[in-house]
Length: 267
Image (cartoon, rainbow, N blue to C red; front, side, top):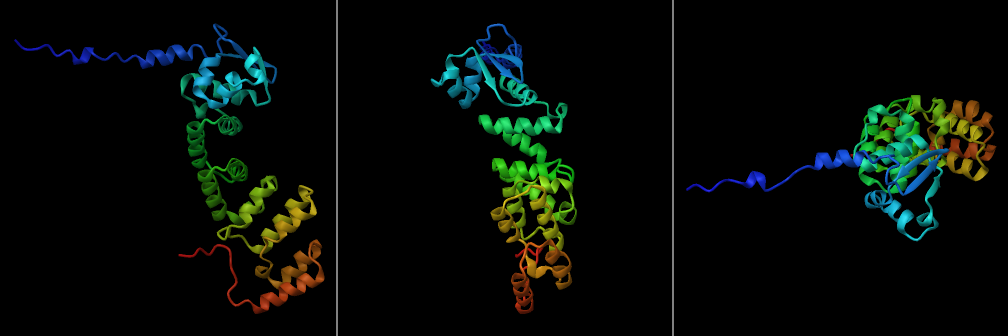
């Protein structure tokens, strides 16, 4: 007599049902044992779920900190981004197309802060595909701040390809000091050096940067690549270099046989 094949009855797979039921707990006050107060909004949650999903919340809620004994915890974070993150914690999903660009960026900041590495990578992957003239300076800033190598590389390459436009953008002045230093170090950032000088000078004036920062930034400008007429008409009139330094630059220009131009990449 043939043996019945019962292998199809040996495994019960109902993870979709489990996910649906857990999702129903999201921001639901039923059985909640902690409430986050974010921008005066009360967001109920369940300690064990948050602690299971995040080492940050495990330390916050069970690590002996004062918050571990509080039923209400105030957080100084953007409320929309926090709500998106809480939903992700309970459901494992996030619809970026339903979010504004600012919400996506703020959520990326929370993912980085709270150690959601997989979520961070997913958001970076999406941002790397939607880089534009309008947002590239902001994305370069974020990549520099959070040490997001993939986004830094992608946004940096976009800036290289559009360098002449980038230095004329108003958002260029919104670059952080560290991000601007990183950008000026790029041999592939191929804009006319006199335009780079104008942009750096504009950044220093707009941000009211102190002398050490300005000195460091001007030190990244390759003055020997600036035509002599622009050295007098533009650089000299900006009054950031003394006469002796200008004469030294002119002397260096005459001696250099192979200037290090931007935009040239070695094999």
